[in-house]
Image (cartoon, rainbow, N blue to C red):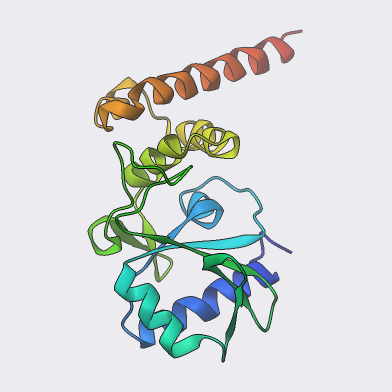
Amino acid sequence: MFFQQKDPVHKAMKRLVKRLKKASIAYAIMGGMAVNAHGHQRTTADVDLLVTAEGLAEFRRRFVPKNYDTIPQRTRRFTDRTTQVTIDFLVAGLYPGSGKPGAIAFPDPNAVSENIAEKCVVNLMTLIQLKLAAQQYQDFADVVSLIRVHNLDEAFGARLHPSVRRDYIECLEEKRREDDYEERQNEP
């Protein structure tokens, strides 16, 4: 059901995107839904969106609590009242992963989004860079999968921020180890 895009997560995302467009709130889809948009199929249970602080304030003003409920102690996390899907907002200027200041901050969604299937999705370069900066297991796995899907190599890594290049090379090497393993499994 997830990959047919008829599940609650896709429904919540489509409804949210429609509301954001109508309200002229700039956004870029992030997280697992962005990974899917860039060609690697995996499931996810939530919707992550990159917005500006002003965009988040406008979202709250227009849609909370009418369409979305707040979550105690989580100022940027909401629940879609219809589907019960969690919506996480990543705010430009804040930092991925631990949230502590680092070399890479979340950028303005207008500067890094591209149109994929009539939705604003963070571009591949930014998605990979932010996933590496977050330093989370699932994010590294997503980068390995995106390297595979897009046949990326060292030249792509050279375009990334210097602070994440080493982790990118580790992901590239992991992809190559997986390829070698698969090749050995297919030998007669």
